[in-house]
Length: 145
Image 1 (cartoon, helix red, strand yellow):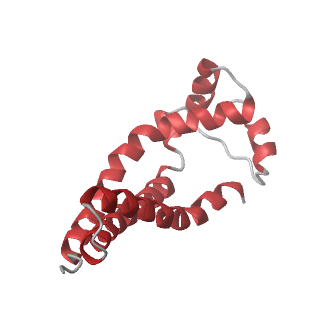
Image 2: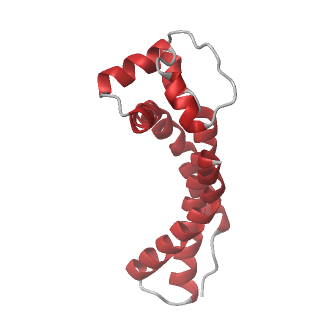
């Protein structure tokens, strides 16, 4: 029986990690707006204006997030990308792991355990998703600590 093709796994892991970057950056500003609305209860237009201006109503957010220092933020579109770097780091790590683990798991189930290609893909992808959840957990906990 065939062994796991490690170069293929590494290539697919790299593809997943690189692919996570544009997707995360494109969606990040929407996540910032959503979090603002969840924390303040503001309507969409008010939340967008507040983020752009640098945080109208920061007292509400700072109290809920237990912030210890207040800082002045200037009006800018860059305010919509606050926290983007750690978010991209998390996504690169978890997506590259997910793609690598999926490739390795699918190959293992298909070639070592004689699963059909469809069954190997189903079980292998599920296995990689479970592993990815463990890797993402520390970053998710950082959001609430």
